[in-house]
Image (cartoon, rainbow, N blue to C red; front, top):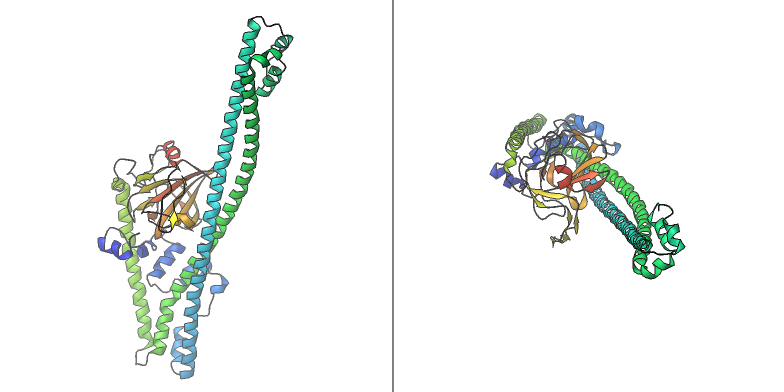
Length: 454
């Protein structure tokens, strides 16, 4: 991921700090982004979101003015403000650590569910294949019996065999098993049918067990997602609380410790100037981001062939390509790549689209954001529920690059994030997944059915 100063120098995109202030216009993330730029006074925005633990008794400028007149009172106020600053810092660290821990648990649970679902599907597919083989072998044995009958076989069991139709492979095999003449002339084919039938039943039983485990792990993953989102929200709230008060607390502390004749009004003016400067910077960043997003939508993000281009463009199906990047990794089994202290997975549950660090990521369809935050190996991650059991996921978003929040409604083609290199990633890209009833489907086929190439 490119550092902030690299993006600022190239002029190609707003900085991550500016981006956090842009999307949506009024949201917890907007408040967080503005506060990060030094704006004081957003507590009125964040206040309803703050849990009781954050409802500290902050000093007013009148308190500061009164304390300056008395050395004992001044020392007490300095101690109080330092305690508030330390408490806010500690709360941010605590909530961020908890959010990171639960994000890791969510990732592990999610991958366990994906693996279990894949295992259940494989077992069922193998069971179906063995059942088909049993029917084929039984039919083959039946054709031999028919030939024996046409050639003058006189075993009465042959007549019984053809007295009615067989309802299943088991029924057919039961009839064939009574035919002494068939058993001697068609033993191998009959044995193959019996083996395939037994194998099909065994695999089918295993598939039932695997599906039960899949369903259990899905519930675990969903619960972990809820817990991780709540922890991420708590960490954001703590950061909002810290940054909404930090500038003013530091200014009040400086006023108390200042031995010159500078007035309280001067410190207040400095806080207000910082607030106005941050507002102006946020407005400029918002306008620039909107311009870049419009250009990307009109020009397809500059992507060419090989699956690139047309990011954010909505087609007749109501779906949009989530990125203008080229596909760098497909869906399914792949060789494991290791580096930077971790290894890639042996099965890739999505597709990787790479357009460059800081490039736009768009919502593939309209829906509701059901997760926005850290997710272990996925890094920064967004999941959108599109209704009808359909969902999409977007991973490896750059730090500060999530532009939507939990519960937010988004439209197809809406700018929701910026491409990054967080989590278990080996370069800037978006890891894009498509879900049907919670389980990943091949995005290449899924999106092709909706008129989009990825």
